[in-house]
Length: 319
Image 1: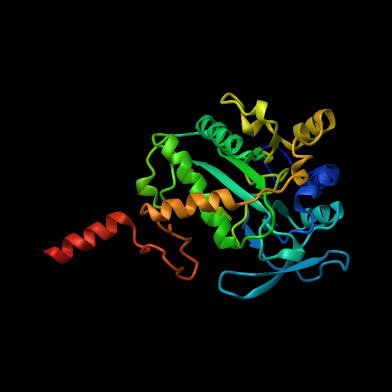
Image 2: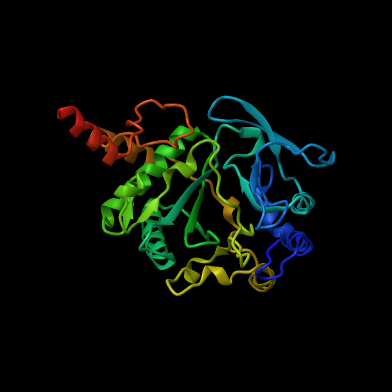
């Protein structure tokens, strides 16, 4: 599976068998997309968004609806054995929806993705994540932080499942804009890459329907097989190297310190404050932001035209 480090499919399955009792808490009863590499990292990859044919009867599913409205039955983990079964089919990473099976249209997680742009890196993402923690503290919210398994950082906040995907995405935009106001030289919510500069992009669209993030404890598709690893806040420092969190190290770590996210289900927050920020920003002239290009056109969305292209077309029309 990972030739650079000699990690076989058997090793991957063994890792998921060992981490399963800890990891299953974070994917339990969630519709889950499987990121599969049947021929290893050197081969073709695909995202399995429907229950694979021939799945054992004990592998359960959850019904979800794509942005188009089309339904699908996705794998819904109910026990650690599901992770091992998926690994034997070449699943490297698990991408759960931010919903539970019994409430598939109402997210119970706000997910903030700190995405380094060219010229920035993990240390910059850490700086912005620590700023985000200050905002959470002001809200009285508890946030849970993890490495992405690459150069980024992911922040999760457990929510009361009372709001739809549009509301939760708007809340993510409002949160990102607040970070942008506090650190405009470090943070951007600009959807178009040409406008982001050397800043950390708050990828608000990770909260849109059918957009998912690799789960805690998922191995990532990088030659060295890093793991997206839950952290304690005091571990979130610029000098941390996320690529050192290999499967074997993560198993040792969990055996020594347990799961830093063990209490994530202890509190679920009211999204109202962020939605009030959204309304405030709309009243001040900051409206909807772009959706991913494969989405149907959404209400209030700006034109899906790259800004430089729009300027070029405008100049051409004036000539």
